[in-house]
Amino acid sequence: MHRIITPLFIACTLAAAGPARAAPPPTLQAAVAAYERGDLAGARVALERLSKAGVPGADYNLAVMHLRGELPRASVQEGQRLMTRAAERGFVTAMFTLGQMFENGDTGRADLVAANRWYLRAAEAGSADAQVAIGTAHYLGRGATKDLAEAARWFREAAKGGDVGAQYLLASMYESGEGLEQDLRLARYWYDVAARNGDEAAPGKVKELDDRLGAKPT
Image 1 (spheres, rainbow, N blue to C red):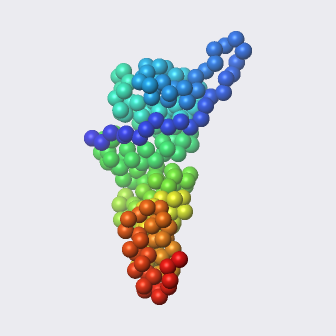
Image 2 (cartoon, rainbow, N blue to C red):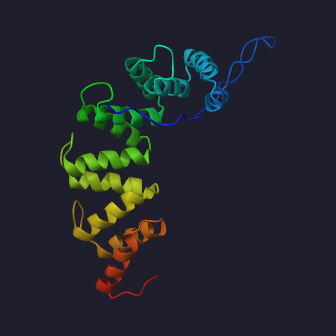
Image 3 (spheres, helix red, strand yellow):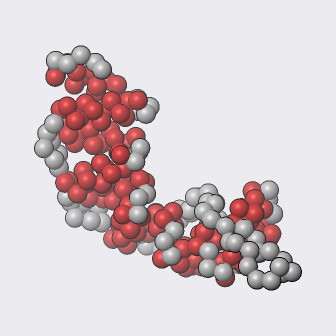
């Protein structure tokens, strides 16, 4: 069974509340700092307090600790419950991680339909990783309808968000006319963006399209 290895994620802090004499509550940053210095017990106590106070980032981090087996009586089921609660409270990283969990079968049998539901929610919330995932699902017809136009739409969103793989994929779809109208100039544009962002194959595609378009490199 695959295990989630997503790192702990600092998202927010919980402001101090109550009488001035009360001990200030822990912050999510402090909990993560405890985790990073190896104080798993201290991290757990702080995260559990924050989780009870309704901080979705704490739910997410506790879920990760359960999934990594780093807590007493660690439980994949409890990890999934906490991850789901964080996602339902709008924590985008939790939405994407749930998609991974369902895709990989981390909590049992793989469920691509459920994975894509969470990928879609995360994609709509702006996650470039999730946009690539749901675009790929539509491109391959894997747990979703095969729909090249929809795939291109999500690859475009991820490409605009800076995902290099999506930039290259979108360029190739413009080049071939898959899912959208063929446009070699837009293909060249996105290959060039991918090249500038470090894709190793993209510079060759830029040169190839320059030759085909009869254009001077820019």
